[in-house]
Image (cartoon, rainbow, N blue to C red; front, side, top):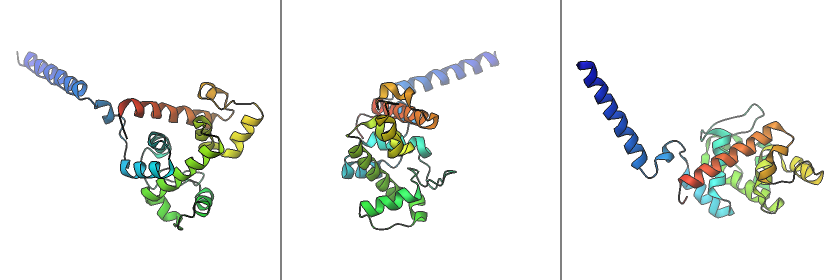
Length: 187
């Protein structure tokens, strides 16, 4: 008799949890949270870059964890290579920031990463698939793929990207972008 009561209570708790989960209009945001929204929003407005794209890149690069450093030396939330970060600061006339600050300061890292995405957008005439690929592989590689006809630069042909890491990267960014756009009405 006691076992039956326990099972009923557990079943009731489970059903209640499922109902709360599905009745909450934004329940999927629990599984796909976006951290640093204010910083992303500010930089996306400043550089006219889709905030969901910035969030998707951060999600794939570091899962919103600061102070990350890749095996290749990329640093911070948006995993900027030190040479690229220095080039961005020079080109954008952004006051110098130490690489240590860039690694630990989300706002500055998001600022440089967003400026770089704007720059890539300009280089690739707004082609987001090429922008994302270039963020990972570099604009030189992506330009050569496009020029040589290896890849046409579209989302539909991402499977044609010759570098497995970049192909997988673009697919993951697109996946998270689509999830964020579906889940969040506005940024």
